[in-house]
Image (tube, rainbow, N blue to C red; front, side, top):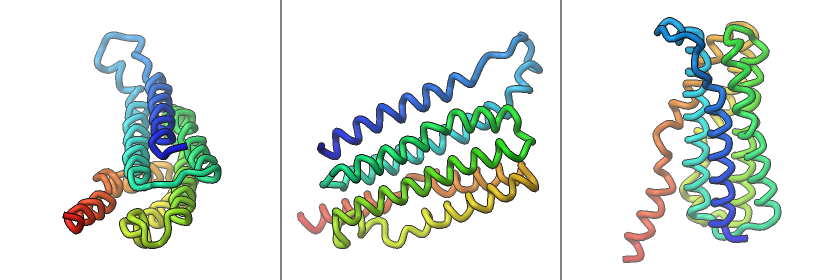
Length: 197
């Protein structure tokens, strides 16, 4: 299988996950502006989850843009990532409908944590095949941001049992850290093109 075909399959899964997630946004029963107030936690959960999925989609695209070899292990690692991301709509819906309760807030963090670990594992598996001198290895470096994200998710899961709102703040902080697309791969590709010219 080519990296482009794997990326196309993954894009389809991302689209389905986002479609399922938006179904949680049901219109209010009344016609007044005040009827929207109970939906605020669900809407905020949707925005946070949409941003997180967008971050994963963006970085996944960049990673496979510079990946040349795909084998069975890469396919399973990619499916592992997609599995955890496919749980985001469920976790988001539960957390948003019970925003002030610890366990659903922690479950949401667990899903984000496992997705982060799965992405890191996929990245490492690809790097093992591409080599330490590959474009991807040069661009990623020691991946401090990825490791920090996992650490913040662990702290947020613990915080959910003490102050659920603090967990939300930490989930948003990780999303903001990744919101601007990671320019490392694009910079390395642009540098390689300049050197070739």
